[in-house]
Length: 299
Length: 168
Image 1 (cartoon, rainbow over the protein chains, first blue to last red):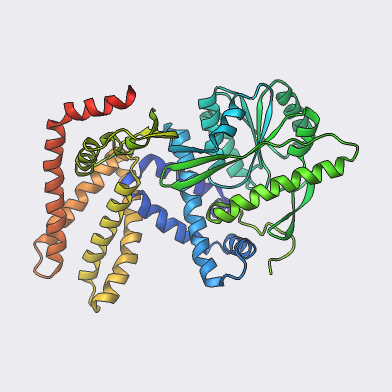
Image 2 (image 1 turned 90 degrees about the vertical axis):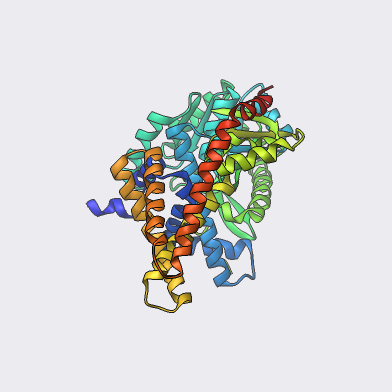
């Protein structure tokens, strides 16, 4: 069906974004962003998903206030995807600021492998590209594939053409073979970047609690950290303003092997969700989760 | 990609600005500044890097276009300006696409759209209603930017010397 390409996850918008990056004068970009962020508020499921999550993050807030907050989420999302495409197409990077530099340096100089656990926050995609280019270390990024077939094909073409040297992108759908590849990469001393705030269907998950609501996080990063005995670094790439990002690296933690695996995972997941909660609470406008994160509807 | 590390004052490097007026203002600001070290910051040297400049120009163009449209609408001013703003934002999207399809590059589209904007200002500057002041102010700012461009060109040696200090 040809009209599927105009759906919100259709390929038309990806192609349009790429075209805009290559043609729109930069001094008109804010007006273009403002317009299209408003246009995408018409996307009901996405808008309602963000509003539902905002109710859990900021309890007691009005629906109207959350509606305007949703616009801010869409606005930030538009800028981050535009910055990523600009970097990939034109190799123009944004400004960077490092928070908790000591943890970042520790990650960079980590002798063996490590896992970067991140979330759908700020510009995780651009962060992986820049990290690979600037640190000189090999990094393997695992992400969920696009749901639309044409978009997936377009994205794969873009990845093949524009991905930074030292960066490999793989998809979380081929779970069993990918787990072995990731383990091997960690044992070779590479860094694996995984998003730990959303579970792709068919992927093993662990129960967690975020903002008092039950949810699931992918089991993969925790199981890998335990198997390969490597630390997990929570890392977030936060948008500060136009073409400006802050890289926040938190204190690493390990998933220790004990007799009780479930307890080890539970402890690691609670460290991760506590970190995630702190970061999301301070930057809810950059958490790009367009579906309700919790199976239980927010009160 | 040129980068400056650990220097907060590099934000004011003229090379991070697009229009001559902003480049000149940045140079004047930078000239009076002592070096401000700040570990953990990486600034990119790109002419479109300034958030303030790009937002300011974007808003200025949108409001100016809204005034032109409002002047054409037979409604009371507050209603006309509100409708003008909505129509201006919509018209800008069309103009960007049309410009992009004609000239096929960011730089060429930038020159094309700015030229068109100045031409429209020249048209409205000849009107007899209040909107002529809007047209005049655009022409005045364009002229001021041209003067600033001449000054920036004359100061290019001093600017390059000041910017080279960041590489040291």
